Image 1 (tube, rainbow, N blue to C red):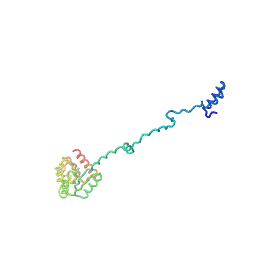
Image 2 (cartoon, one colour):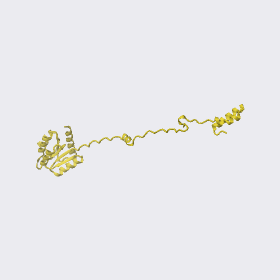
Image 3 (cartoon, rainbow, N blue to C red):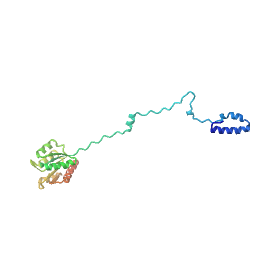
Image 4 (tube, helix red, strand yellow):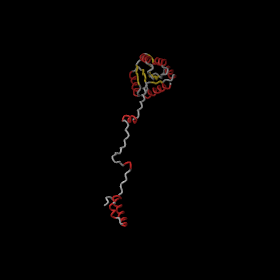
Length: 206
């Protein structure tokens, strides 16, 4: 008897056809030959005594090389901008400290000097260091005008901010005409920062 649905259909067809032709016995014996064999593609068939070669996978790229290729190179960070350097000259300790606190809070690099002589020595020794000078006109050992002249002589491009308690002073007009800032004491934090910022802006434009 047939052992599958396909061979059964073939068997029935053959019996029906051969019953009429009188060859039922012969057809019944050879019905196995009519069974449909499953189709196998040629590339999956194996010849007797041989083994089909398995496909060889492509080699994987080296881990280090693949990682280097996929990882972007980080750009070098830009150098941080240098804070502006300001020399403060005032012989009154409380006022000098007031200026230092205000300016340091704005990330300025502040050097405080308490006398005219020390201010002249400091500036002469390191005159290229500073970006502006904030000075008092009336000092215990002289006037700020002497330091102003030294600054103009060595660094004509350097802006100066003068802070004084004497509004009637002929030297102030000369300083204003030169394009520098003049503050009258007592001056507020806002006035100090505004004058210093204008001086630094002028320094960049000169």
